[in-house]
Image (tube, rainbow, N blue to C red; front, side, top):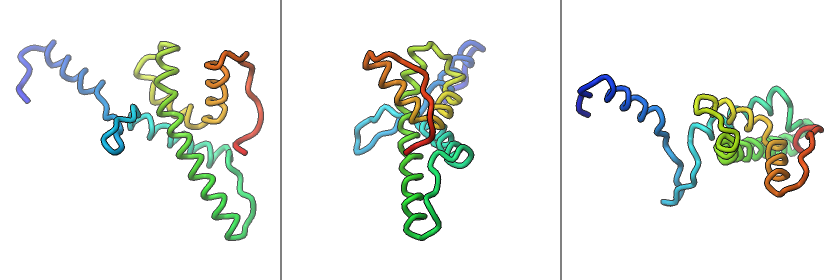
Length: 137
């Protein structure tokens, strides 16, 4: 890479590198998912599972432990996908700055079920009410 000739060119180079993020592709098809948002959403899901007990255990037998582990893995996967797709949408609609995007993805991953229900109600035109209740079924 050539050295920038001025301070302004250097600032543009640094800003461009900071804004560019990798987009996930599967089988040559771009999915529109940013890897940094997926990781932040996955981290939020793990925190919710561990600290908030959103997927409680059912018992102590091997069968129940395997079933609970599978449910927890599915919740973490779905929460990270929800954060990956809904965070940019919410950021555009609420005009959130780029610096807050990863924190928002973490929060969306932690409360993915409630955030998804809110987004579905809002986009379908139903009246949006406060969402209360327990964790994932």
